[in-house]
Length: 70
Image (cartoon, rainbow, N blue to C red; front, side):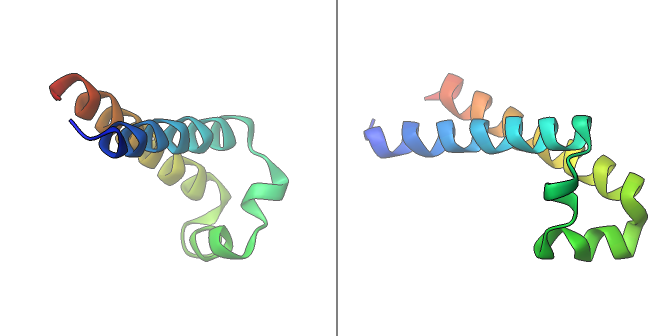
């Protein structure tokens, strides 16, 4: 397979881990950024943390499954 595919799956895994860590540790710098504030205003801080935790799990799972299935 093309190494670019592996690189993309690794990026998915890294983004998933980052999203999970940000949600777990409730980083102010992350949840006060402009892009995330849309979710904070819509769902509240706790809801945004749950959303980003679920997003992180989905990205992590997608990256791992993608690498394993190649």
